[in-house]
Image (cartoon, rainbow, N blue to C red; front, side):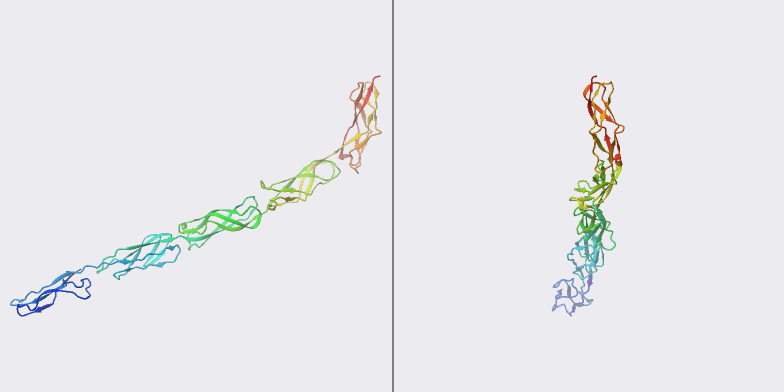
Length: 409
């Protein structure tokens, strides 16, 4: 700034004698003209004016320049923040006393006046500046940065109950987050869930690990933990027990023997047993129904199953073999035939179940040598014996043999 002053600090004297003299005016003290250094000797000049025929002489004016002053901005460090915090104000001052302006240099934030609004996680740099005015030069801007931490959110899950399958694998049913700001696009994703153990039970602990965040706002958040726990049940598995019947020879009872099979999980330790297996009746027949009852399951893995207590199957009851003993053949003289004469007086049937009605009918019995040749101890085959009686159908009869001699004529 350039100032032109014509000083009126003059003395008028009548002659050229010098009771007064001219010289520099020195500024002392403090005045409103702060740009002029105190004790300056170039503030102006004191001039004496002498009257002359042509008028006043030695009148002087002085011109000087007042420069703009420099100023500085004081802007203190900013504290770290967390995404989701409420808007906050910043403050700074200029040595000139002029107002300071703020702006965002970089980072996820906006500013209005001196109020900062955080819009995401990261590093934000705020600039404080004062552009000066007619008396003050612009100040050097001051930048301050602060970190915006990710907001911590907590994930939670629910898990589906399942039927025992021999594994600890669990399925996550739902995933939720607490602590999300407003309508931020943020979801809990991923994760693998397992039961604490594989056994059947209610309210079993389930732990999910490997959870993560997804969504457009994921960069502004962090999980308190990448794992979460819940509870779910493992229901006992239905064990299907089936039976395979074993054929038997008629013994007068309905008792049956079966082999049990089941569809247990591979490598599970189970023992499956039954109390009773029986035919519908004791008659000889193929493919007879067999009923099995009292099925039970034991073993270290039995608690993981519920089993049927009854089953059915089929099996055969074949006729019991009867034998006839005590039949003999008479020796004979060679006659060129194989006909043998039998003696039935000592005949007896072996193998009839007590109480059964069955006898041997010998009305059509016949005996025959193996050939007609002379010999001793020759084989004689008996034929024509049959079974009769109410229970005859439950048996089979093996035709007996005996021996006799054919002597020469």
